[in-house]
Image (cartoon, rainbow, N blue to C red; front, side, top):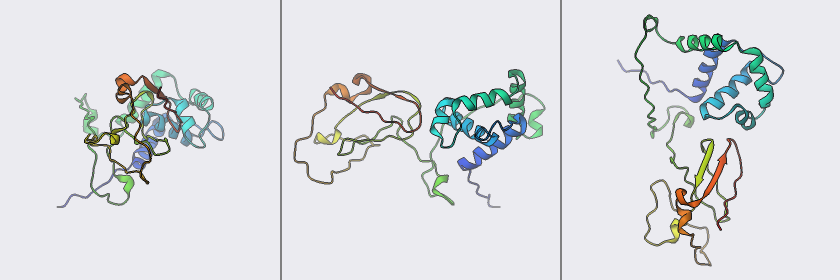
Length: 217
């Protein structure tokens, strides 16, 4: 018998997570913006990106302020011991009863293997790999953009790879020819800026949209 194909999407994960946690923690509405649904959205967003509650509130549209969300959670969540007990019950909620009778050995596989085929219904079903080092290209006007950068301190390197004949580009960088023929020779970038370990260039990533100008001296 052919096994039925089932695609798990981010929406399914968040919906089920919210349902399971709300069933046991029972968050209550705390004002017009701090509804239980909004609070779970903020918490899931912060947890999935490993960012602070304040950063999640700042990144999400129509989210409450971090102070309001903090006060709402303090007012509606139980004490620490009870909270831990309810969270454990929520985590056990989907386990078969046979596995709950005694302690079980647990192994977690943290290796994410991206799927490069075609989605079943929607492109959102497919997780595509991205460069581990947040590689991006600089546009002709000097602007650049990098997506999905983890929050925290990031090291930056700048290199004009295509200006050096015969030099191979990294596999995750594709050469994009300029729209017009250059009228001046490419600018040579000092060697120290070509490696994040020696460039001295850093940026504090806080989550959400932000602007950072890179100055080469």
